[in-house]
Image 1: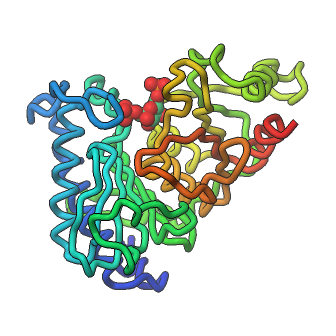
Image 2: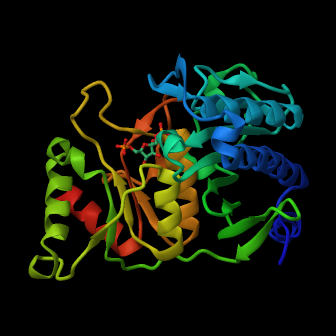
Length: 323
Ligand code: AFP
């Protein structure tokens, strides 16, 4: 089985970008170890703090954020970072070539129940004309991403990574300490009969999503003519991993539950990197009205509606929005 560097070299990835990716993965290996130690390492439970998103931070959120921040800034090739857990961007080397955004621990409410969690990251080109301190650096559409990936801390620790030449899956070999290529190319089936959505929000969705899910629930007897199954992991990283492995549609649509927060998922830390991975695996990603990776952000902590997965199913869902 092949290690990461030769695979990325073969894909023609810049050597600085390769070492940046490997540095991020070194931090993820450390997070993986601490996660696997659980209560023994005293990493479970909450802190007393809230992050910029108004969510209570878990101890692991803070640990993972500090680990990633430190190693990424030490590389010297990064001009600035933006983390879901930080109010503001953090400046690095003024001459750095790259920007990194990350969600250090996605699905953190799963930590205390020993369920799936992960780290999501995205790498963008730095803008030479803007200072490292300028958050405007990050206001680039997802289509500008140079690389994106997640590390899933599950029964095995897995990495999904794209640099724009397909999406590859790697598994952490804990005996040798590195990630080995275990799926050359993730390929999301075009058709599916599985959906993932938080059904408890149903009454708050917009009419298009209400109608779409209502039709899926009618199964064989309804307009879609087949029975659908449902899954919900409450960690996007786990739901997207399932979609990459066997297809499906994942949605976190706009809702009216909290008028101050119509969308839940974060564009730069969750939606863009996952959309890049999904598109590179032959899937599709949309808000229902536009391609997610075409959105030009106006704020680093912007949220967005997300519908992604098997191409034909996402197209069907988008059609309900366009009616
Ligand atoms: P946290 O990382 O704050 O736990 O949020 C996870 C998440 O943003 C995303 O990964 C899940 O798909 C979604 O929230 C789960 O939301 P529900 O609370 O509605 O299940």
